[in-house]
Amino acid sequence: MTDSIVRQTLSERTDMQIREVLAGRRRGFGSILLFAGPAVVASIAYMDPGNFATNIQAGSGYGYSLLWVVLVANLIAMLFQALSAKLGIVTGRNLAELCRDQFSAPVRLAMWVVSEIAAMATDLAEFLGGAIGLSLLFGMPLLAGMVVTAVVTYGVLLMERHGFRPMELIIGGLVAIISLCYVLEMFIAPVAWGQAGLGTILPSIPDSTALTISVGIIGATVMPHALYLHSGLTQHRAPGRNNNERRKLVLFSNWECVIALAVAGAVNMAMVIMAAAAFHAGHPDVAEIETAYHTLTPLLGGAAASIFLISLMASGISSSAVGTMAGQMIMQGFVGFRIPVWLRRLVTMLPAFAVVLMGVNTTEALVYSQVVLSFALPIPMIALVLFTRNRAIMGNFANGRLTDITAIVGTIVILGLNAILLLQTFGIPIPGLSNG
Image (cartoon, rainbow, N blue to C red; front, side, top):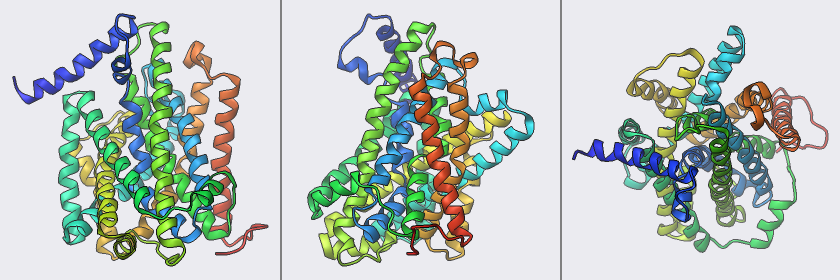
């Protein structure tokens, strides 16, 4: 039996076992694990290299004081990823397809263009992150690291042709590597846990630079392409054949979203905590991934620095593959057009190569790519709120009042932060906020 048949059988077997759980013929912890996959894949977007860049700047420059931003962003992410998954389960359509169905041609064209720009900004961060990790860990030129990252990412993407389960397991393994790396970092870094706790529950934005970083954290945490992707991952994965099955699928999906994104949120908070513990007291100017690596070695030892790079590489490769999947889904959903994976991979790599060849600071490029994402984010968020509260689309699965209000508030928070950043960008003074 060939490898491809074995992998395809793995997806088919998972589908069959999920059917048994839905029918009540299979129970136990192993049964719950069958439903783990879509949120795990989507969660890699919340641990991509853009998070590394913004979290290092947050921790080194402001210590533990911006941890609350990571927490709020993650809670918003949990809600909207759950809504995206529910949309795919209930309607059998993904978010981009529903946008094409429900909106006029000019509106959906504008949404597609903005979403494609967001996908490119996403891929810039992910691709550069993997390349930087390879370059520093193995001492190779950055361009060589980019080529290796491209080849490895394409290899991961080829697994998608063998069904949904191999890709879920590969991405899940890389998520586990990233998580383990930051568990180890917490044992190495001299963390002031009391200050970390206060920074998590007491909101503060010390100055305008902290605001820029906060919006970057939001953009790096709640990802536009992940909102599109999650609905596509659930729409064809053991689809519910009646409302009873759909109800069970939504329940399992909600639990998976909470757990997978809680892990992603913990990793993000660990990134900020590590940067705060290692850099804030003596090296608050550490703002670049390369500088962080070189500074970690004398401060915490070579092991801490190597663990940091391994997590960065795993993040870059996995999130780049997931970003390409999302880009394909966005294009196919909005305009009904699909291009070969290798061509999609090539097109989305070009901005990253341009940044390196022009000599642009790579970490600054990562941070500002996340700000771009934050401006693109309200589009899928608003669409999700509109669709999931619409009974004509969702039937009995339409959002309840509390969910509806919470989702609207979350969207307003993002819009508000973006408006403040726009005022700051154009030099309009913001009361109560000093320049950093």
